[in-house]
Amino acid sequence: MFLFSGSHSEKEKVTGVMEFETLLEKAKKGLVVRTDSRKIQDGECFVAMPGTAVRGIDYIPMALDNGARYVVAPESARDLVAPVVEKRAVAVYVPNPAIALGELARAHFHIMDRDLKLVGVTGTNGKTTTTYILEHLLASSGLKVGVLGTVNYRWPGFVMDAPLTTPDCWMIHELLFNMKKADVDVAIMEVSSHALDQYRVAGLDFDAAVFTNLTQDHLDYHKSMESYFKAKSKLFAEYPRPGKSAILNYNDPYGRRLLAECETGIGYGIGDTDLVEQETGPRPMVKGRILSMTGKGMEIETAWKGKSWVIQSPLVGAFNAMNLLAAQAVGLQLGLNCKDMRRLSTFPGVPGRLERVMNDRDLDIFVDYAHTPDALENVQHTLKGLDFKRLITVFGCGGDRDRTKRPLMAESVARYADVVVLTSDNPRTEDPAAIMDDARPGLKRAKRVIENPDREAAIAVAVTEMEPGDALLIAGKGHEDYQIIGTTKRHFSDKEAALKAIEEVYS
Image 1 (cartoon, one colour):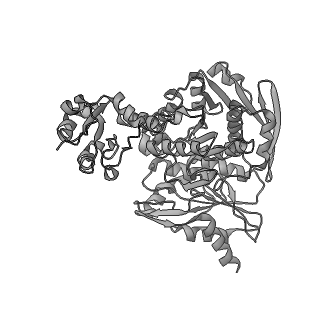
Image 2: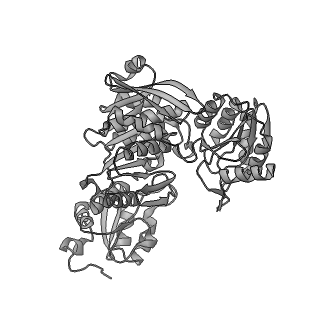
Image 3: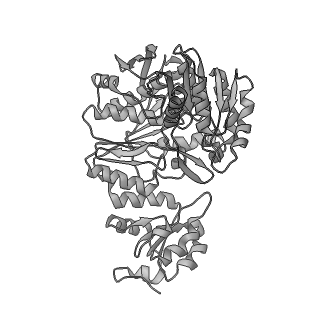
């Protein structure tokens, strides 16, 4: 049965095929586009997305049954799609439906036609902390700021938990549209490698993009470090708004690669840049120097274009100095000046990022999201440098994720911890004992190891182990308030587990 209305062109009626530019015009006039065939309503457009596990073209019949009037499909699948769509809807064939979705979302929401600055932050570690610091810097300077990140999606008057670090493409555009309706000046977005590889940020123009670092993670998906890097580099190579600022970590070898490739690259980091510039060529640099660091925070000097200034921050750790420098570099590109940077002294920290668990026993307990070898290295190195008597570290490895990093994570823990407590993280559909078996070879050099696959019980054991002057690090989950066992997501908080253990031990 034909579903064409009288408003359709003769070409649509006769051939059932539409040019993509015509569909874009319909999106501008309000056509709703979806990628979930179950949610399609009469008259809407279904985009058959490419997928790693399933193919969008397999769901075209369901979309048609639910009333799809337009179907966007890959040109390469025309012969498969045409007989299914024939006489039921209008087909639009494109090279890549994921990119097409971004263009349709851009047309529908008109985001890029609005005065909204967009900043993307990518990298293995530091994305969340950098976005929080930048949010504080911009907001305290009088700007209205929105954030799409790992913890939540938020702007003044709105907050929702984040199911994904970077949401799907249509949702991103819709969230940015709602930010602009709320008069947000700057939107800051964490951009994951998965999102870049899957073109979830298609249709967006970034005013500034930050690269924090690249260390081993997600190789279950990307297969190699080079492939992982190529996915990250898309933020700088494939979203080239003219004059976009590329803020790149010159202390990281992958950051230096990008710095050499990006004409608008701006380096940031700690230490002299003479050797860096031999590798990258002359580039503007935001250079930092840590003047002091104690358990109470740090004092850091920043230099940019002949000017220098000093800020004091309650954050600790060289990695947080890098995050502070990245945020300052973005702020400078968005029009802030060196005096504005003093506002960073009042930044309190990030939930789940070396977050202190306040307790009435004055125990030094920290929760941190570190779940890669590099992140575990950094956070433990920081705590070991703060003159605690001993370091006790609780950690586990995620299930259904990169198995090769498990012994590497364990090696990082063993290098620093005086007592290692090996447990579960989110085991998902893997056997927790098997995950621990994968990690155990990395603990050969550990001073002392305690094992318990029950995370709550492991945290309780760690609290019991504490002596005056010790620091306890509970790593891996940070801000998360859940644990995934099998396919069940249950409430679980490392902070709550630690406080419960303190109450039981000292009651």
